Image 1 (cartoon, rainbow, N blue to C red):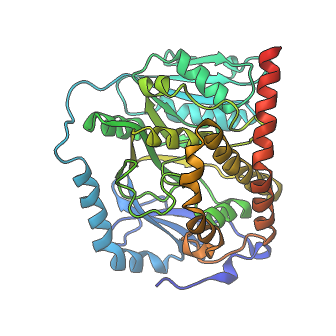
Image 2: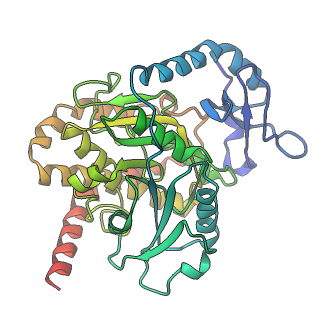
Length: 410
């Protein structure tokens, strides 16, 4: 057991936390912190470009982590390899489209996102940046590249922007990331490999890791939520199998992947009529559009794959206020999403009712049980923002529906 370091989490003593990588032998393979090593580090253990485990601790923990978890980590590699056994992985690489919705709030981050997409190690792809603003175009802010196109969507909301990107896509596969994330060079190849190796797979979710810990709020996100995803083992999810005993499946929002790291066959997106434009950032519902689509896919008999080698790094919110707004928004989006599912198909209500007990236990469980961070430095008021958001979610969805109806009449 790695030792606790609660004294290191106090905001008054805050110092940026370095992210370092170590191999299974406990050797730091980079990047190493510049200058004197900080007392506290975020350790990612893996093989080559793959991350197999993360831990929040000190440099002394690197060797101990590798030693105590080496066999388990190698078992993860074996289990992941077994997922693809007996399936095909041949033929040409499918043409892929990457869609990035944006309101261009931070052009520097958007530029970094697009730069990472330009550097992808994949033979056949295009990038579509969907400008979701009503103001001047952002096309001139991006360097010219024949693989990058900018299209506009005046209807507000990330869902509408993603659907616009799908309409413009030429790829057989459509992958999505956000304008505050950067993708690993092998990201698209890992996604396409999973689709190519199993023709039954219609959606893929990847692993999302933190890009930095420069501000306390960025650590709070990992402490409170356990990050976006903790899927280090490849899995295949079906409605009646493959959920590893998850009592919330298929309704647990963290089971599949996040909006900044997901992909679908274009035919699947057409069959499901895309994202629900009454959900997501930019609407009163604030979120929930990505798990809602995954849940609809699985509930209709579709197959979703979780692929941990498809890595995206996300820049978490940098200020206290942004973090609280995010927590509130996630709470709103969660219950708005459940409301949308029930409105679309009332049979979901019966299925959800069977999971109320496990859901309540999940929400009230100690955060340290679902987060690898060694302490809890986020303010206790965080729970208040989450609960307030969840209570408001159904109302927010009703407002979103009313707004959509008024727009349709206009």
